[in-house]
Length: 373
Image (tube, rainbow, N blue to C red; front, side):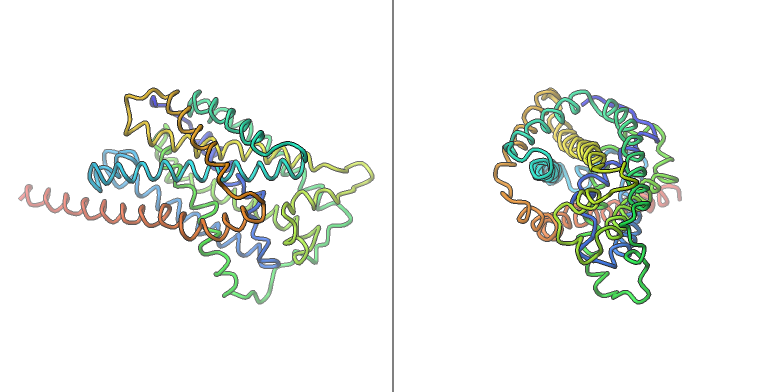
């Protein structure tokens, strides 16, 4: 893949849309009921720490190598190449899980009689087209999608709060939260999804034309995303109640369906559906781009278009072997994947890589000090 550059505003838009991704569909922590706001707040704080850990990995090497280059230089050519291949599979797998999220969502909410694979196929076609155009094109589109998504979220939230059915007593902060339950809800599920998935941005951050922005203000995208998630969660609880909201597969849609403001603002759930499309599309594209970018750096002679066709064809085929119902899919995504897949790739390997880089950096400094003497 040819080298492309994106601006700080574009990476901010990409990060926000990516973090919202399928989170606004299935990952709002409503299973924590009245403590959902606190769970999301702690998860956002953890997300900031995760973000700086990933930035530290990229910045510790003075020559500013890419993530794949760091894997090779730290673990050796063969082991590093194996890790790169594993990350490519990991990025693709998570991307296809998001595709399944939207297959179930669209077939449940919009098109009841359409086969889910048709929805996934359309998603894959759009994703492939975006990956062929490249990161710069994706980033430019993200700025428009970011503006549209934020405006629609703000409008929907405002109408929800003004709705007569909204109960402020449902969203009052807790005085004595059950901290054991809160911490158990946050770790590992709520930090690996979505904030730990920022590991994919290690393939994107080197393309930012102002690297100092990532360290000084890049974390604000994590905070902004966390605030949006908290606002959406509390608006749902205010409309449905914490005890009831947890029983719906798509609680945001259900809460918006009940809105009737001044006999004019009714059935505005189409706004949330459009937002789902925007954020879900960007998340799938970035995960698939990270997978393709990873493979392109170990197979430089293979044309970019051929990689796109091969990777996305394999990804689409894998969706047929994933969970067949929304209940199984949600349980796998929120209980099994965080523990056994996310943790090794988001924390295990990166922390080991960071440790090796720090050791090598210290050895280089000692060697340089000895030579100076």
